[in-house]
Image 1 (tube, rainbow, N blue to C red):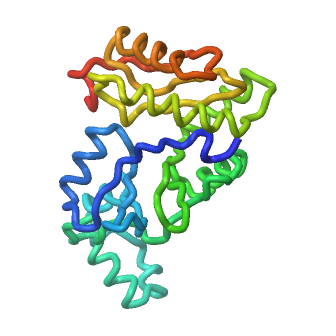
Image 2: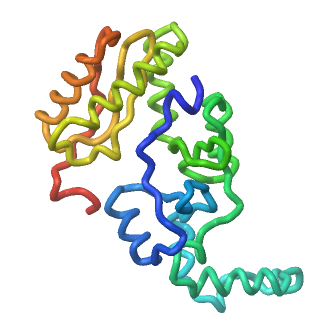
Length: 230
């Protein structure tokens, strides 16, 4: 399996000028740990994580050990100043972006997340964001690969796109941005959050209605609308 087989295509993003308070609220509202910063032409210029925002809560005088002052450059000090006091996403975002391509094997993504100590990674196509792969997405892929000995085929990739389109197009689906799917040998597995059993059934029916899908299994967590983000 590759990144394109498990990535979330409905990626939540922010503009470089988005204020940090709005970014923090977005992370809480969507239940995510980081958000890519994308310009108007679709270019990814950085990512804002929970860690970037939490850094602003620390005491600047206690941020680093004395010996770091011996090796820090004026440029480092200026960067820290901007991150601690900046008001916009472009001020606090991490610019050393770790990203993968659509054809990156998921076996290569897992150690990358561990090495870089990150929870999600952007998937780029010529510097344009096409999806996000999170730790949960990797588990989805692992589950799908273990449920069938057949590898993902071009037909499975097409079916996956159609299944995602079908379930996210259901009227009244409250948290479509959490939905993801994997398809292996025509068997679809739907992942994400549902607010009711009715939503889960509707997603299964929608996936089964996609021509070529042999079976649809729902792997959905259930969180009532009032309980999200608490």
